[in-house]
Image 1 (cartoon, chains in turn orange, cyan):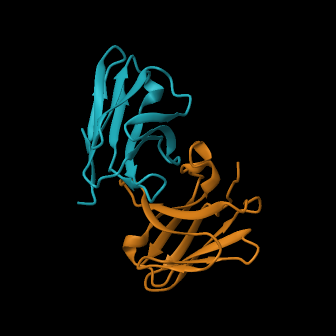
Image 2 (tube, one colour):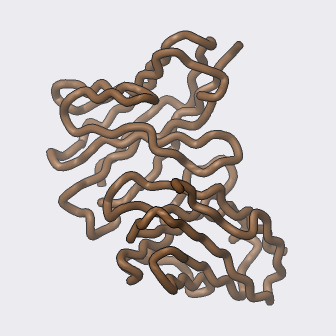
Length: 115
Length: 111
């Protein structure tokens, strides 16, 4: 099982950028890097995913290291609504019929945003 | 409609009761999931249905019985639960192996 390591918690100020790191030193060539977040009292929601290249969408950007052993989720301007637990998850496209092709959540990073 | 709905929002049951959790989606997704989340812990995958067939059972005790009567509905039947089964039960759906959409969950308390 490929695993991810994230800091337990991070703090940010409102309207400032936030960089959430994730280490995945045992990543395989067929693992996609997914990010989900879970706001208080809600189910998780998809944020972004990527394989090798950096990715941008309306919610965030994903920067992937050249060796793919780490990645960073970037929130360009944090708002109070971004306070959540952020999960970095590896998903193996060659094992989509088995558990490793599904979402296996780690402990995540709890992001606090200060006004 | 990009919503996954779950009913009930809250459920309290005794150890001898039988109850069911319901999940519904109208996004045309053919994969549906049940997760269990204990307080301050990450969600844990329980079951995966793909095209209305059970494809993954993550060694879940038989007191939890999933059912997928059609492509829009997913049920979780509960019987003879234990207090340690108290948790938030999350349903999700997706196109096969695509981004998962989660419902708000059912908060279950077993007395």
